[in-house]
Length: 381
Image: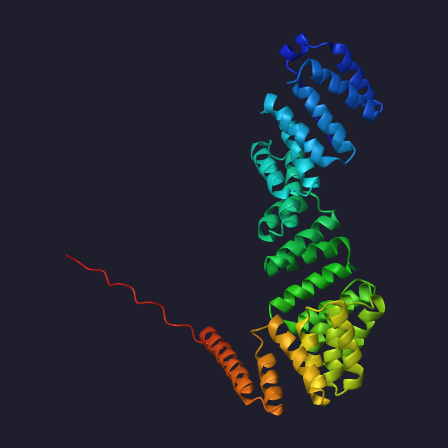
């Protein structure tokens, strides 16, 4: 962590230089503990010495003791509130300690006052972009990461981070633009293909999304989630045999992939293979009990096999996890009716009908938006 330290002449004139010189020499030799001892001696003689606090912060940061470094940098700033290097190092310590919001508060003003087109601007764009990214504030991360990536076109990792930020902030054209820039550096980037596929899926282009995921599989069949992504897209298009093949391939890479287990189980159900589906769904639930589709499918499977009590339990869990899922309430209604619990069946069917009507109304509103309000005619005296 770079540090530019300055000491005002007034401080230097009143301070015994011997501990300071010893501290600096020990620092240069990498003797951190001994250097800390000397800087502490400086502070005993001059408790408000900003340089000593700043160096102690640097030594703690070198040892990855970021919390303590933050304390020392803040004490240094009391005596030197306008020293840019101290604000930068405080921001870096905060960033590395995971305190991203206060780190942004340090980096932001530094960027505004930095000389245009300077290395400092480049660095601060990256730091601000990554800090917002770490906060999952992807929309705010994008402009900083875009600026940094434009100045460092060979940095593939930076462009991938930008593409992720664009995707998660629903800036899909930005994903596709960044994808094409990545291809100029690495024509076989599976991760970039996957990001482009996700963007195309969000843009309602399933054929384009599937094509991108096929390219990703070809580039790197061991890429995490690559077979799952392709399998899921095929599943959405009801291409269950091929979806099952891809989901099985994901499980070869990661046998405990809960979502691959779930969708493979559902594909087996759709293909009328309940004996194959059940162990997959049960394993998915053991790994991740919060996957609603696994509970729903297992509930259907169990109730169809005559295990109504167990099926009911799974469907009730699915309803708690996804109370807005029409299919869950419809399935519950059917099972309650089968069990002779007519009042509960009626309630579930009513919920399903209400949700279905709300879905239809939403579609109608999208297809036929209300007319614009009439403008007020101009009046003349």
